[in-house]
Amino acid sequence: MTSQSQTHHKKPPKQPLKSPQKQWSIADFEIGKPLGKGKFGRVYLAREIKSKYIVALKVIFKEQIEKYRLHHQLRREMKIQTSLRHPNVLRLFGWFHDEERIFFILEYAHGGELYKELRKSGHLSERQAATYIASLTQALAYCHEKDVIHRDIKPENLLLDHEGRLKIADFGWSVQSKNKRHTMCGTLDYLAPEMVENKAHDYGVDNWTLGVLCYEFLYGAPPFEAESQKDTFRRIMKVDLNFPDSPLVSADAKNLISQLLVKDSTKRLSLQKIMEHPWIVKNADPTGTCSN
Ligand code: AMP
Image (cartoon, rainbow, N blue to C red; front, side):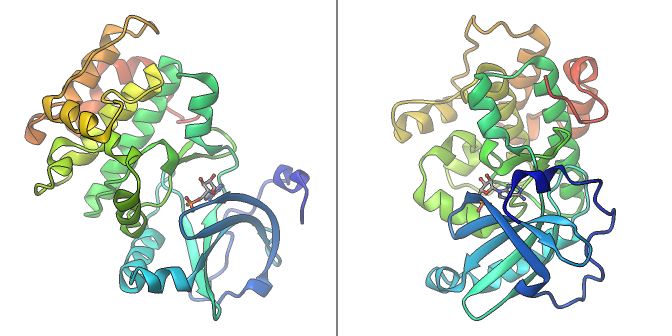
């Protein structure tokens, strides 16, 4: 399977992959085009031969996992992600391994990275931004209920399905976030003050990140962007928040952002209050699917 045409297949079966206990192997899949490259390996479009179900197969080299001694953590986090069932959380259907590699059988997100969409259009419409923020809020509320904090939400970790529905990927896979925090400066932009300061943190960090994302969706760049990591750090700590004149953004949207980017994590708007905020109520598409 190599062509794009496979992606326009007839509706896939609702239940893709038989029993979760089934022992999968690479022989169960036809491998298609590469979808992307991550820190530890590549992601391919694939089709489960029996059900014809289209998935994304993530291939991770064991050598990498051993090198960073991430084995136990990886196993634990894989268990968490397989148990999460929410329309805005990318499903992990299962995994298997051979001598050299670990394979993740993931829900295929046909629309790819939200990040690319954002870069392509510069910034999103209020309707689109509010729909994504509402989807994220609902997914986070579900995860918080299950005692899972993501801590690494950023546009690169947000994928879109064929209907434009947002999917949080790498959910709770702290392995990856740890590594990225270690090696990438860009990540700092999305971190709450208590996290950049390495203080104890709780669910409130995700609420802060929602404020950062909401700003970035509407303005095209994160709010505390700066020349250097040190300056970003300073701006986050001061909550140095400015709203440029252009693009034009509604007062309601700015109000929501200002209530999320609050230094004291206990004073940030709760997830429930975000859903009740007039900007969300007025703009978010209740189906979660919105392409403009
Ligand atoms: P990752 O290793 O998770 O960072 O994935 C690398 C890249 O592969 C991502 O940035 C996406 O562009 C693509 N990708 C990962 N997972 C999926 C998926 N489930 N569906 C479609 N594309 C994906």
